[in-house]
Image 1: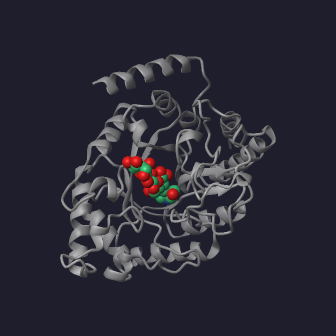
Image 2: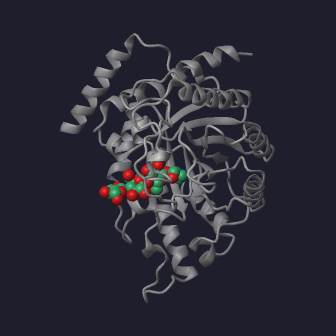
Image 3: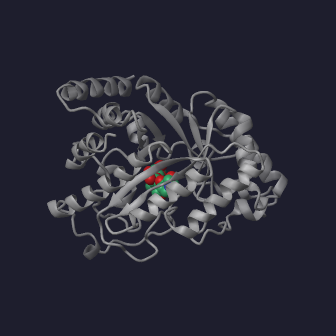
Length: 373
Ligand code: G3I
């Protein structure tokens, strides 16, 4: 009760503070696409009411940053934990926001038991298929008609466009992707179904994703859209490559969503550290953590240019793009503070550590008027 009251008070407080504020991102972009964000467990539990005030004001699509992943929903076989996901659904309903399900099948954050047979060896194909069927039927079934769309398969590709040799592929074979989408479609025929991945601006990986879309279309399975995660930096990717990928996915007939947008301002740790391979995890090196005392205006200006450059492309392709989701509400929450190096101070999102809008928010609001047809 306390946390709900805290939540309500927080939202009301921040709402009054917002009363005199500008038009919001969700209002400005409503004619073009949904503007979403990812909520942490703490935010879902009402422990960060100021952030929820920002969510209420600016975002109309909510994604669980973590609480709808396999390891959170079904940490042990048959032992489902829906509390946090149910709380997010309640929040979405309270805020009349669209709820996005992330994610049904991923090679990360999937408990080891899923791939292990009763003999302690690798699970058989039949057993893994049965477990995937149970998970998808239980999860998608529970939120049938309430989750607008699911990231059915997440990050199935290597950067060269080949299929990642995950346990899913090793045990179920290459058509595991079709199987996952078939199961999701059967569990909620009305839900949108997405393939989601990072670095899809990369021409080879782009082609890999196009192959997945075509494989699903050939199998007669529902594929609504491709999620381009959007974990970018100040000097990557080339925005033309992003636009080329949007055009390529649109040519398949799929919608495009930018599903996890953030722009790191920190120096690159190494050439592998572009994208989102969460297995990268390096110890802090202070020389690669230059802004622990604050972000220089000149760097913030560079980041603003990147965000506005991307949103200009998204607006240009708003017939194809149905949603742009920021991967977090505020800089404090961002996974990029700890990836690929633990303990850095990044400034990757649109709202600062005090949940205040950075100058880029105003720039994005002005952009809509600037590019109005
Ligand atoms: O909940 C536990 C907590 O109980 C424990 O005390 C703590 C310390 O071990 O860990 C907590 O779990 C962490 C979880 O975030 C919640 O904070 C996991 O260790 C940590 O690995 C997890 O990181 C998430 C990461 O996915 C891996 O699931 C990030 O927050 C999340 O932003 C990131 O998001 C992914 C997308 O799902 C897929 N695309 C890439 C993107 C960035 O990696």
